[in-house]
Length: 265
Image (tube, rainbow, N blue to C red; front, side, top):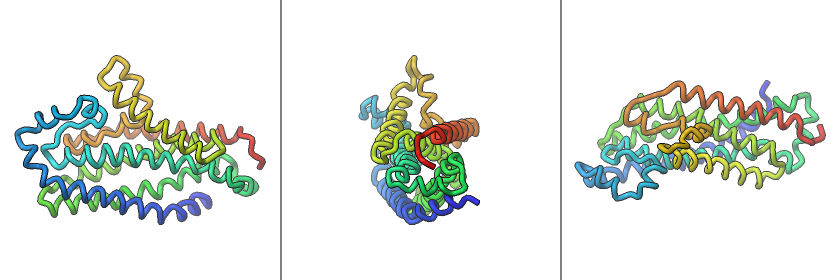
């Protein structure tokens, strides 16, 4: 069972470790530089934020720099997790099917006694490897680094944040999956996935607080809020459920699309 998922998962393991090292280095850098800036934020946090253009404040949802949690939320989790990792998972998802189609390997896979729907599901499931590895390694690094610089943060909040990022990253990967079955050229699929994912981030960020805010409900970014978890210890299981449902809808849509695509089996 799950032969394709296990095979693709093994192929992604080395890259997942490299990804974890990269995100851990980013986390260490953010934590390490915070003490040198924290003195500047005391008592003038509001004035400091006013120095940023309003568009930047809204785009990156910057709420405070006066605590390590607020600094991490902006520098690491909004920028690093929501944007960079979200784009990376969309990019990976876009290669799940299109890469095999372009290289001529899909005909071999479809000649096996396995349905197209199961092929899509198992290849998507292999994205669990980078998602899980980066969310297991990085929070440990963040917690230890914060303790070493004398700015300890809540282990429970940190664990909750990374747990909530799992369905968010799967949703981003599912956006890439749709692009992967819609386009049989991997380069085009990847660019399409990156464009859609970043476009959704911009849509959600710029429409928040406007009369058109409801339109942003289609963006996965609406349901992953690092500030709420780190600053308020607020965990919304409904948002996690929405992300799971969003991912399921996109995966099923990808399966149906692939079943009707013109590929010899």
